[in-house]
Length: 453
Image (cartoon, rainbow, N blue to C red; front, side):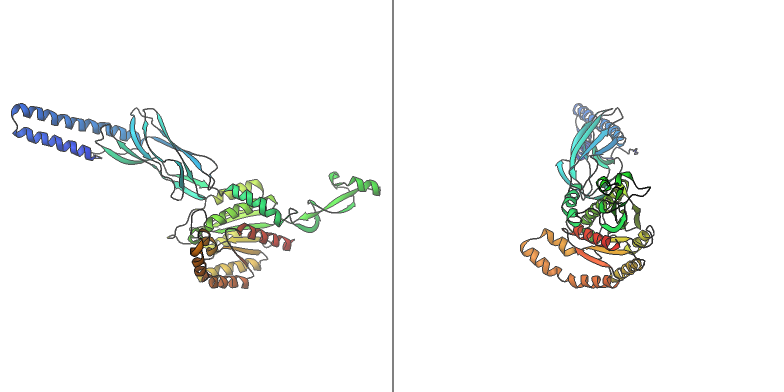
């Protein structure tokens, strides 16, 4: 990163200005002083100006070396929300000019929290050498930008100084917390489907024994029931119930209202964790799962797929969610639903939409119209609506909690109106809080599986 260096006054510090003033005073006194004293004052004034000039040359050399530093950040992978992550910043000086006592500050994303050591420091970078700075942050799920590194360069005498930025902006992606997802999966899922995958009641390849029948050519030998065959004196094979697999499209609304609240406990973060948890569960059962994220500028759509590669693609998309701001325009959820439907087979699919539906009435009507169209094509539709009062009351207690519940009760009427609108379209709307968003979603999925089976 080269930059044109300017005149003597560029970056001069108060100390440098004081030195110029002192040199000027020496010259002024020399004009009226006796000849013997004048010579000494002129020498002193000239010495100060030479010192200033030499300091400027050294400062320019350091500044040029600083702009050409190679900046590298190393972060522990994978980045997972809530887990302290070590950041190592390295500065490599490829020039012969040493950088002495450089003040550096490595900015981290505003939603992150510093939890160990410091992202600021004073380092020396020798010529053809390297310096490092290490600290720890606690990241937040989604896509974030690490800004360039800020540095203050000074000459050895401290007569010149300048703040610069070095390095490039770096994009990082943070996944939802795995520990919580694993815990939820252990505690919740077995209670929903103790027998594993739901059975369709049809003969086919599965894991649940259904009946015995006589062997016919082409049957797999591993399905022969030898005890029964010996007893009946003819080969008998086991038949199993066929498992029902679903094609599911998960849809996330990343509107600014989803990001309101305390970082770590917002509706958006809980929805992202639920998406990751549910996707892992469904894919482990052999379902086809896709993901659509409604963003301010269009939508990101991942068509349904199976297996671990699909889960990796889903996690990559989940970790790329950008945090919305109150000033940004809300995404067009209706348009995102249309794009999602274009990747699905016609009918017999399940759409699960995560949205608080805190939108203008005309937007809700348009969304419900799209959902009604999906229902008319023999699809099932479930809206999982994180209910704001249930999320915001989480951080309150005592009188504050009681007052907030009274205030939040006013929103019940509006929520009831939206539920009624969805009911007309034969769309299931489930209001959820932070504790039951995964459980409520999985119960609806299994209900649909039973119905389709």
